[in-house]
Image 1 (cartoon, rainbow, N blue to C red):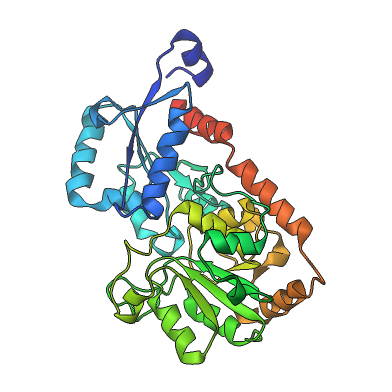
Image 2 (cartoon, rainbow, N blue to C red):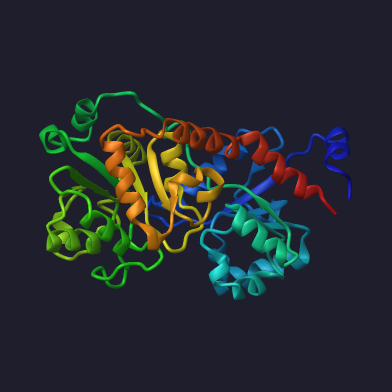
Length: 357
């Protein structure tokens, strides 16, 4: 096969890409699909096609989509009759489910690893992989430099409720879809509750957003932990699924990052999470367990062990007293996130591995 350089010199042909994967609710996977298509559309080397039979690359933004029999077997057939390369994004901590690697080894040519941890894990299995983080829209997630009162007004929050409070953010879905009263073990909202129980309640306010927060809201109520839910809390009261109604726009989530003082990731298992990249781009202080891409983006002083969560509590109190504002660590995270999401670098990685023999 021609090298990338020779091929592009001898032909103006674009690499045709068909993007697969969606969740139809405007949540994480739909956002990934939108951002992936956008990055390919900006490139002179790639062209998006809806017709998989015309594609040179079939790019799945959610590798588990391919596991569905009505998708998996037709694509295996397509791979056998047409020269096409399959790229698939690892959206979770695949180290916990290594059997899935074997399941897809005859279909997926290139695994997209969002973190160094996942990249090294896939390489140990002698499989092709490139490291690309989850794609976050840098035009939406940014530092706004607006006062809290103005941000509160934009979010339709009573400014008096947040005055003189440490605002601690958590914007995710962490209740099980089939039983909204139970927590998702991967997101570990129990740890968030443990931390909040040990922060002075008169000085703090937990800002919650996102659908399926039933478990965390009910725990806050039970333990009298001060919180503010951004969305329609009535559906939580009725124990109804709010996956559509409380799925906030990215623009509103960006306002929330700019409003809060600190974001907490308490997860046990993650492919990302995107919150680390979003917080970095908005220059929001964030503390995270050592999951997913945390160590790729965050300074080690911002990463904590679940067994030593008292460090987080102490540091939040320090930040509230302005003893240690973490300016260097926040700027470092911003620059790292900006670098790893450089669109030219990402596209070159995809193009180069496509042309490899």
